[in-house]
Image (cartoon, rainbow, N blue to C red; front, side, top):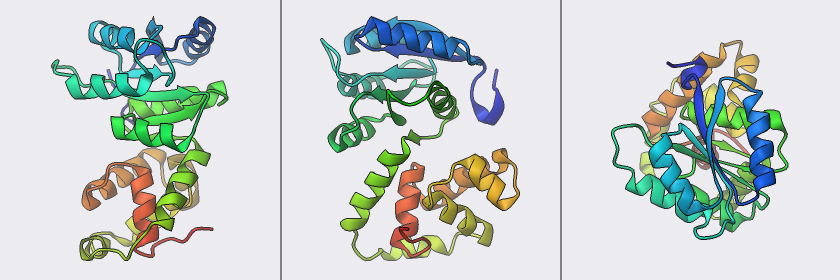
Length: 231
């Protein structure tokens, strides 16, 4: 069954963390936030791979530093080797450390989101729902750093990127600018007087038009072609 904004209902979650106290706490807080359902736990990356194959979670909440196999290696293995008919799980990295090296490595491995463990319970539950629905989720500070690092290395936009702007409607451009400003779908909806599902659909269509994978890439595109500026 599909719930609001395209997320499955219930959202089956697998937790992978070598700290049993962290796993127990996460399981308890997520269990109180339907439609999330914690279906299993793993104490290391290798165990998480086996559990994912048997339990078929929608979202795997994964720590980075774990014994036997770290979370980034496990993410890469899981997503590259997944051959079953069911859709691949989406990975949300939840780590004490948000160093640039970890964030870049996690995204390259295929993770859909990255949050610090000091995020609030509501923020973690929201990230699980967002990732389950097919969107990406990064801590605001992480997003800002990624964008600023990219902008510092930025060169002139390519012709294909400039041509991409011609595919955008006036409403598309409004949404792109607000994405680049850091607003969530809910914030964009409030700003433009639209429904949140309408904004989500609009962002998805814009990403498809431009051949981009996520909101961070969209924000960088907007800065590069001059649709937005760093504040």
